[in-house]
Amino acid sequence: MPASAELQTASDVVRQARKALDGATSSVGEVIDALGVASYTPLLIVPSLALVSPLSGVPGFTSVCGLLIAAVSLQQILQRPNLWLPGWLRRATISTDRARSAMLWFTRPARWLDTFTKRRLRGLVTPPLARLPQGICLIFGMVMPLLELIPFSSSILGAIIVVLATGMFMGDGLLVLIGMMLAMAVTGGLIVLI
Image (tube, rainbow, N blue to C red; front, top):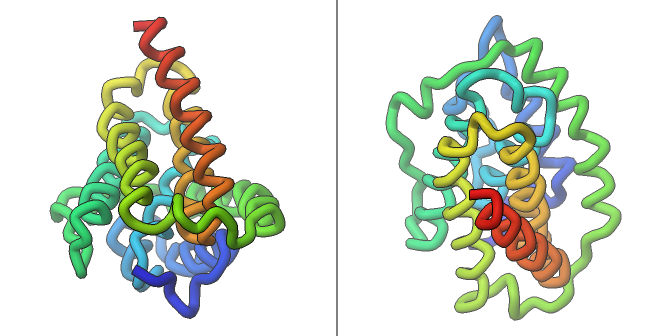
């Protein structure tokens, strides 16, 4: 799917998600609706960035983000024309003040990703090879709820998903390749720990 005309960079995604934050609490559904995505990848960037922010310390937050990442990745792999999420996941909320602080925190990493990325190695971001990074995001999303009690594990997985999703969104196969190499290294480390 092509990227939305409005959302062209990781910074655009962060900015648009921040605009969706309103009231005392904000829901997953409100942020998704505000992104108005024509591509699934912005919906991977936002929760994965949140996982490398201080929000990852909120009890249950890692599980919600992991399930969201898994649901989006699966539907991206299946090439569904419209995203479906269960009502309970769309209704999951967080304090708007806390979410805004996190958005400000990950403005800088998003800008850095924007300056680093460019269109290259396009074969890795188009089918059939695009299924590899999408599959990694799906697997990492599914295991996040299981790793909630292991310190920093969700932040590490979230950082890798940020790299993969930004690479897919920006059409940067080199960034995707770096993300896949990081994923293999981390997976090996997790297997040793378990």
